[in-house]
Amino acid sequence: MIRVALFVCPQTVCSSLAMADDAFRLANQLAGEPLFQVQRFSRNGLPVDIGMAEIRVDGGLPLAEAADLVLLTATGVAVEQTLASNSELLPWLAARPDTQQLASLCSSAFLLAASGRLDGRRATTHWLLAPAFRKRYPQVRLEPEALLTEDGNLFCSGGAQAGLDLCLHLIAWHGGHWLAQRVAGALVFDLERGLQSRFAPLLPAAGKDDPQIGPLLLWLQRHLDEPLDLDALAARAHCSSRTLLRRFKTTTGLTPNAYLQRLRISAAQTALRNPARSLEQVAAQVGYADRATFAKLFKQLCGETPGAFRRRLRSHL
Image 1 (cartoon, rainbow, N blue to C red):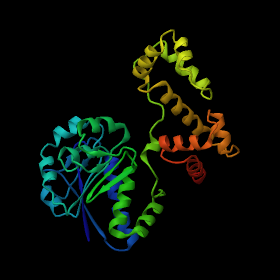
Image 2 (cartoon, rainbow, N blue to C red; image 1 turned 90 degrees about the vertical axis):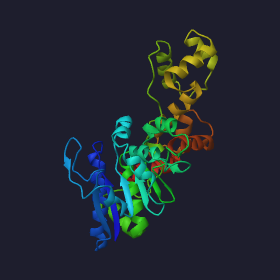
Image 3 (spheres, one colour; image 1 turned 45 degrees about the vertical axis):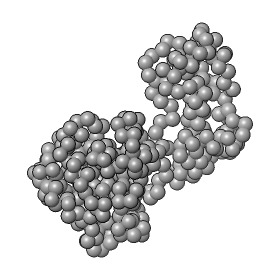
Image 4 (tube, one colour; image 1 turned 30 degrees about the vertical axis):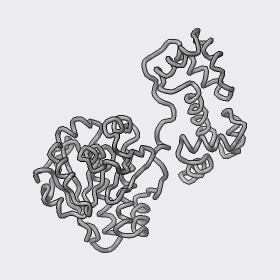
């Protein structure tokens, strides 16, 4: 029997804990035998108030030391608070033997990284937290586009539902791919869903307001299929090209060209929902004369080809 220990702390996201617990218990039910022993633990072995409920646990750190798999469920976006509140957990994580599997769901990758276990290793977390993670832990090989990562006995998952992707991956690891498929089917969930990057918004939220850049963004939306003329764009903003580049980057975080490419691909995602339009027609509609260039950029930004994107939409109808 595989012993699974789920960590609970005051910052634990209830849905993440319930999702992981349900996945492994459902695997037992569908396997027809108790393949996984699922237990919850806290630092001191006492019940934990997570805001909406008080969670009973089966023990403290000694219980988890005997587990085959220690899983840190998601802890939300208050990273500083989570790290400060769970500082005693970090040396314990650092001391775990390499033979024990350690996994983090979403933001709990910060706990694994703070313990030093992810130094030089592959990892992921929610795409929204990636910049802060990379700044804090530059020694970690962060892959924010990935739904999940595996590096030896270290596992991480991206945001929210990616936690279920990782639980299914671990179920397949210990119980076989057939069992993971059955659990996914029972949960009406797709296995191997591709990259996390396809869920991140293509267009960034604008930074501080700029009365001249704002109208330019609207103009680009209406003329996204036209070639980009930086000088003409600067003339519209009544400034030099150099000033435009600086102010555009400050407002959007992107260069005008990078913003336009994301704007085009975002429009293409909408156009691809119409099955009557060919990929060539969609590419031309958003400003690409070359389908190959369009497909390459689409995959780069969305994590899948235009054809795969369209097929996925159809599979959910």
